[in-house]
Amino acid sequence: MGRVGIFEVECCCKLKSKECKLTGCKSPTIIPFIMDLNPIRDWFAECPGALIAFSGGVDSSLVAYLAKYFLGEERMLAVISASPSLKLSDLDEAKAFAHRHGIPVRVIATKEMENPNYFQNPTNRCYYCKHTLYDELVALGEEFFGWWVLNGTNTEDLGDYRPGLRAAEEFAVRSPLADVDMDKSGVRQLAEHFNLKCWDKPASPCLSSRIPYGEQITVEKLRQVEAAEAVVKKAGFHINRVRHFGDKARVEVPADQTKDLHLSKEAIRSGILALGFTEVEFDDEGFVSGKLNRVILGTSFIAGK
Image (cartoon, rainbow, N blue to C red; front, side):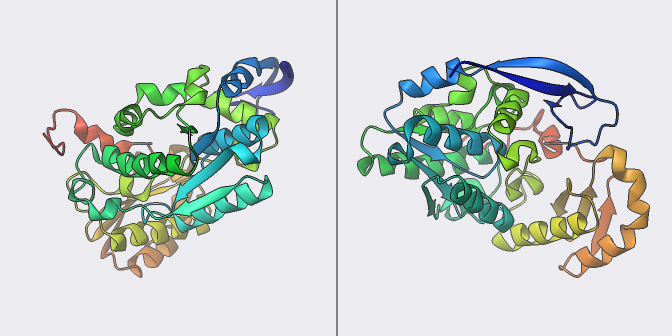
């Protein structure tokens, strides 16, 4: 296996693919693209076996697929945590992906919700979540001796605010995508090349990310957020976020779709109010990934400090 020719599309969202399904761009420009698979092949050639931190997102799904592709099913295992902060729908999709591609998968139950450093929701909350997960994966090393623990980190993650990366470093977790200099666009391109259904799956960070830092995380809040986002999705907004501000829910949809909200506002509002919220607010700015991270600048609310 070497270089693979792929025709891709460059559009306003900067995603290169055969067809832009994320934005519905109507005026793409087709350009030739050559993907060199040798680096990722060589990376896995050094890997004795792989325990993959699997969430069902495109990054970890690609790593799981590549591990099975290059190592074989007898030398890899995808491990997914049935955490309350993972959408039940994402858990089901992850298991279906593994089944579809013959990927061995194990579902575990992590206990980050029992850790005050996590559920008190400090700005480095993700560190404690990943610490709990990687601790479980490293413990599996007794059963799968010598296997590496892998995650789906790509190069774009390295420049973002991601406290979980420190946990990965502490547990010597390896990142094949980042190691071969693959960014998010490259991840999607390679996933599409292998005909993975999740290649254009929108990012779906953990449900705890919808709760402002400093506000306690509870299972009840997480289930409210999941149900509220399902209401918005049913109204036709497949990419959305519902932020949990106590009794108030704040709805975000992509900025270019906010004009369409007026047709669905009342249905969305009534559906969300039925979940126990007393107020529903619609964010005029629109969906911005990691919006709640804006408060981190100038804050010192970090557990352990």
